[in-house]
Amino acid sequence: MQNSIPNLSSILGRQVLIGVGGGIAAYKICELVSALAKAGAEVRVILTGSAQQFITPLTFATLSRHPAFTDQDFWQPTHGRPLHIQLGEWAEVLVIAPLTAQTLGKLAHGLADNLLTNTVLASTCPVLLAPAMNRKMWQQIAVQRNWQQVLTDPRFHGIAPRVGMLACDVPNQLPDQDLNSWQQVAGRMAEPEQIRAQVESLLHTQGQRDLTNYHLLLSAGGTREYFDPVRFIGNPSTGKMGIALATAAVHRGARVTFVHGPIHPELMATLPPVAAVAITSAAEMHQTMLQHFAQANIIIMAAAVADVRPQDCHTEKLPKRSLPSSLALEPIPDIVAELGKLKQPHQKLIGFAAQTGNILAPALRKLEEKQLDAIVANPIDQPQAGFGSETNQAIFLDRQGRNWEINRCSKLQLAHHLFDFLSSLS
Ligand code: C5P
Image (cartoon, rainbow, N blue to C red; front, side, top):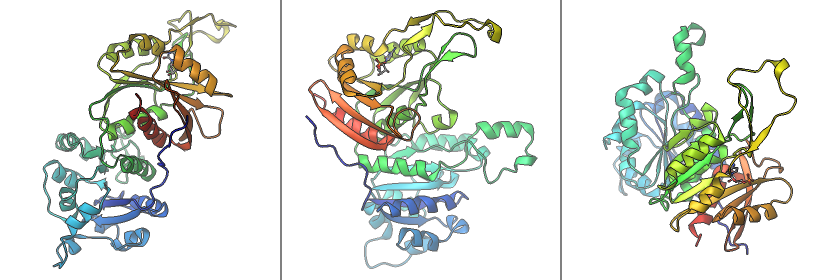
């Protein structure tokens, strides 16, 4: 039985309000406005006074095909309803990017002294914040306090700054310790396409937090089974699907515990606020999943866990000449199958089945054998699907015989499809 699947691909006609702050990253918001407008979204832009020092309203008016708003418009006498009320009611999602320390401080304290901050207070839609600033500014205790404070409000969603070079860096003049921190301390605004993906996710939720009372325990990434300190049996999993699931779940109001194998730091920086536990081996993942299992009411095992491990692990790196010509392997206990046995009636357990060839029959067998409530049959031999790619495709199956076939879409869209599927799990 194939049920109807909501169409997530279109943002046609959706109303996105973008507040641009006074930072050099303002120029990148042109790309965001252009991409959203080209995809058919209705885009309106508000520029703060300092944003206009970097970029003009004309640029945004041209890209959004609509006049851009400034504080001058805010203070104009009007015969209609005040502009900030109209814009606040109009917006389905409000994005503030780049978010400056100043605007962040105002939001954290509920202050409103310009069109943008008044519109925030006059609206109820989800607000996506993408800060960008000098890394010393971002690290200030007061700024971090404001950031944590603002994120306690469920309306606000943060897309934290990334590590990378900033316009205020002078690379060949940086002393060594600064070069070091350059690689470690964030400040750079998230890329426009990352912001756009989050906007689409928030448009999908429409501000509804249907997972508010849920605690999701989610495993992600791949495990590594070492046989000496540098060599291991692993797999190409990057953790992208897991991060997409965490993002969709957080946008829908869930509390998330994210148990993950090694994930690239740049990708980890895109993780929304969750409790993250880093592990390396399947044994560590096993132990961590058991530890958190009882507190969770949805458990999604998206990790690519190794099935076998070397019998021996040498503490010293083996010289090339001593490398064995074959490895003695031992099986690894199936974590999700063990969780299936421990599962209580209030808990839903979901597995992934990465398959080549015929994906349905093996997935159905795993659904049964591992006592899962649902399984994501995931073809990894299709173009732009599976490990490491930005997009994915899948068939969702449950024990009632429901079967949703999801065509290739972004991993974030696939994640929302999965939560939609799970919401009607009996
Ligand atoms: O049997 P197969 O490895 O294909 O099943 C995949 C599912 O089982 C995934 O949800 C994966 O996270 C889980 N798994 C596990 N423990 C293992 C191997 C796989 O929980 N040792």
